[in-house]
Image (cartoon, rainbow, N blue to C red; front, side):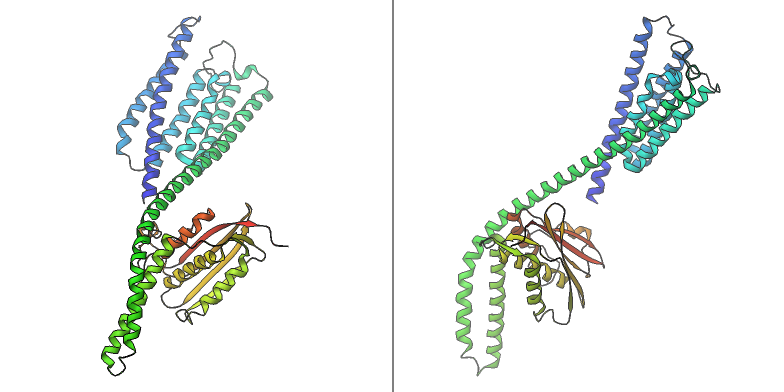
Length: 432
């Protein structure tokens, strides 16, 4: 929802800029037309100039109407389409009153196509490009065959003054120019949008890492302070439990205390893992082999026995460099996360494959409950969880482990369909 609002705000800003640009252009056109004609043999009140003045003032009035309606319109895309469509008609009229075939203003079609790309995107801009080409072809053909008589600034220079093949050649050139500009503008606009999206994503990642670093440092200090007392409590409880066999009630209570102390110790270990992932020796490892080993260990876990079926799609001979314990921890957390998303029984699919830029991609997909749009932006936050027994550190730990490898965890999810978690690692040549 936030992304949609941002897109709408960007569209409103671009449309506001278009209205301002249109007024500026008309002002320049009016001024330049008057200045050029002062020193010419034509009167300032020639019929052609009067029509041009009428068009200029008409566009000025339209711009005022657009500005009045601007804050009242809810469907910004339709409002933009109407404006740009009218702009193409206005440009065709300007070309007609300034000489049609010999007019110097045919380049204005390209300007319209360029800013239509920013407001209407690929499909809309291609329609505008086709509309411009069709309009230009029609008015030039009508001029050539004598159905319309433009107002040339130079007497006698009309389309009928040129050979038919030269007229067709210019129409084809203008058409190709419109289509080419539309394609090029769309490509550049798409690259700009992609770059902007990547910059925003990078900004969010940096903010998240800064937040996690601060929380991690605090968690590490607290965990160190808590860990030793927990170890002492657990040891003392084990000694006391040995003398409780004759009192079942006290023995049950001591076992509960021991269980909760172990759970607290596990939580402290997770805090330490989140705050300071273990540092080990970087090794060359075959990803497929390491992934299968982790899956086999996970399948032996009694919690997943009979509940989960793990499907494997592992590409052979894919190598990377990393600390093996890190890979094991990442996969274990993702498998555990996928397993907990499946309420009764279901499938988890683990996939490994290579892509062109020398990267190895690992995906862990489940057919569980999925993640809501509201929660998906918070799943990487430390201590955020929707599970009754979760600590909310699993995915945060994965992110911290991936950071030194210049990788990031990405997710796609649909409610009641499932989720796919994916990360990339740098691929290296296999061992000889």
